[in-house]
Length: 524
Image (cartoon, rainbow, N blue to C red; front, side):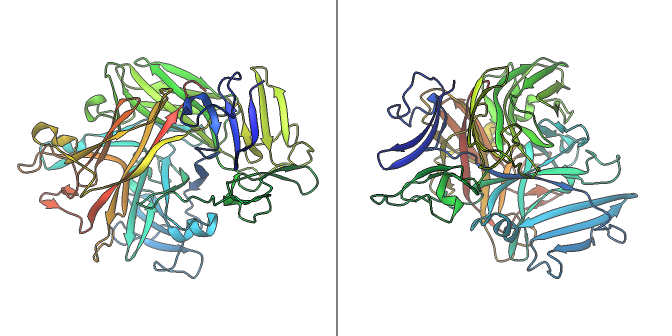
């Protein structure tokens, strides 16, 4: 039976799952991250607060009469406008097709989740939401023709804000996510999955909700008496605290799940299956790093020369407990993957247990679930912690200031990587796979309409221009995993935003780069 330990170590409450049952959760150092499947002393139960779907809705928000330059505008909540809304929806028609573009302001995330900061948000388009089909890394070499242009390398998601007057919003970019009612769009899609991390998108520090412990505090309580509680408090907090954010575990704070993680090799033109212990839902996706098998290290987004002009170097679909990755390129590729899932289902009821022990036919497991939830069929919105799931520690995180934290200046043929670079040393004694997320963060200019406050997971190189060819765009960032303990991060200050045909620059200046480096357990 997997070892799940919940209690207090000194004055610090904890919940831990040991990778090896012979290890003692009270004595194994927290720095040995790879010896834990989960350790609340250096990670949260889930960094993803929520995953929800946005579907094209041309009934509520018709596109008729809207054009690309003058779209029909809709605001949520009703009665708000561009200066006060939580959501802005632009709709237009082009070539007989209807398009929608959704933008979410910080006020939306404050209203939904109580955030005092703009969270890291990622937008993933479905290629076919009826079969849960998604695309692999997005490589766009359309700018490599005879005119001025840019070649791009994207991660699996769009994560770029845009200022509307004085307020920034996360945008589902039309060129990536479409949201069209016609199969002529590229790529055709009517649904995007929106991922909300409980992590800042900009330069703010991660909030520390612990405080100084007091003598006699009750910090752990599992009580089945209706309505029931299942709580492990943060240091200095008590189980009677009214804020779910002050807990390691809380029955009213149940995040999205990590269903599986690891690495696979996919030969050219073949399909490889990943199996999860728990069934996946319609709010499931795979986050990934990808490289040619012949390459020695990962870049994220993918190395620009790694893939053919076919943007979908692989696709993947999900059904039940099987995630199928299908290669659409002519060479073997390596993928480091993390499968995230949420549930849109209502919580179940009728159960009496909080801690369940069982065997699912694959192996033993221990589960902590919401008090009162079904003992026979709890869903992902009931499960608080489960030894069949995996949990990603943040091994390193921070903000790199452009003026002081990028010591290496690039030149010559290296300028396709960036203007400057910084190296991050990652504490990782068990050699977990590294999974970085990196974003450019801007100091907004007074004239900033339609400019970004942050751009995550995008790398671009300017081409066919006498001055800028072979150099990165100003919003470009790149992460290079040199080893299991070392990551280079590249950024590009205020290079042109694009060439069209003259160089165009943002008014806003690069403030620096925000980064999170997760540790990925193998084959879980």
